[in-house]
Image 1 (tube, rainbow, N blue to C red):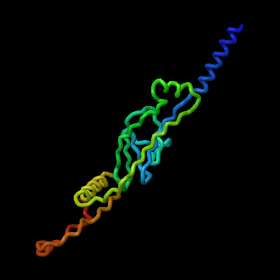
Image 2: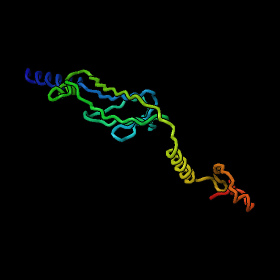
Image 3: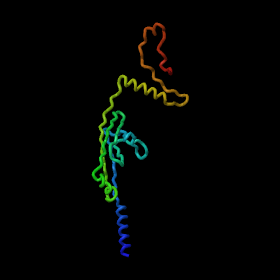
Image 4: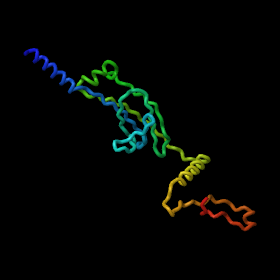
Amino acid sequence: MRDMADLFSWRLLLAAILALAGCVERTLVVDTDPPGAQVYLDEELVRNEDGSPASTPVEIPFIFYGGREVLVRREGSLSEKRMVEVDPPAYELFPLDFFAENLIPYTFEDVHRVRIEMRPAPPPTGEARDELLRRAEEFRRLIPVSPGEEWPVPPPPAREASNADAEEGSGPANPTAHP
């Protein structure tokens, strides 16, 4: 009968140890100055629980340690990319990791912080501005409008009338005509 009681005690002790098992919560915190940037971790957009894009400051849970690529984008700022080395703490190295994650009745919090200073984007000028406007016009034409409606077309830039136009009596092209 004593052997049965000892066996029961050992099983109860094992169940208690397993019930009180430890845990490690790993978090990567990305912050930017100014805040409000979208974050891409390893080329994947970080999202909130509701599926919307997360913006800085953001806490990202992770499982594995190692090198991670962090890209932040914000309107009006230059995109910034960093390679971040997420190193494990001592209690996450073999063989201590087994005890930290399974036997010690404590939740370890491993937080890694990344702070990125974002620089303002210069306004486009010259050829870059012209290329941006050309691409914007191409995309604008791809957007469908309601039947019977047309996109308003801005008039072309003003040009000086040449002597040939004045002599022939022809005026400038119709600025509202569609190409």
